[in-house]
Length: 102
Image (cartoon, rainbow, N blue to C red; front, side, top):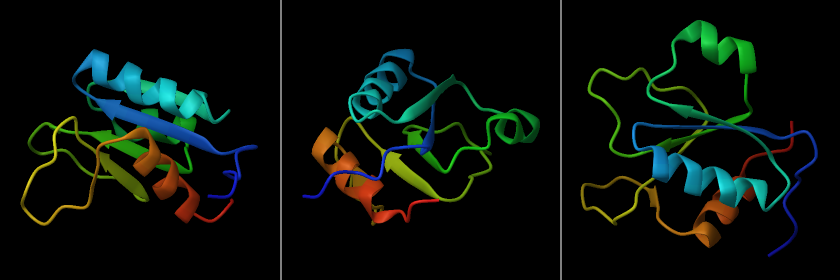
């Protein structure tokens, strides 16, 4: 796998479980990405303030959550249901590499 195009890429990690958000944020920081962890559900103004390139949504997400694009779904446990979930740091890095450098 090639090195991630890290410089200047901003990631917003969103979730209701503090430990999960911290863990996923630390994976991103290891790749020198700029990370904004958010505990809970941000409103549009908060998202606009940071304006990240990619969102990592840590499941479970609160009902009624308005998703933002582009995003990656992170889960601590693999689930059925047809969702494309990321469950390991290596999967996360591979998915981040798929996004074009902005």
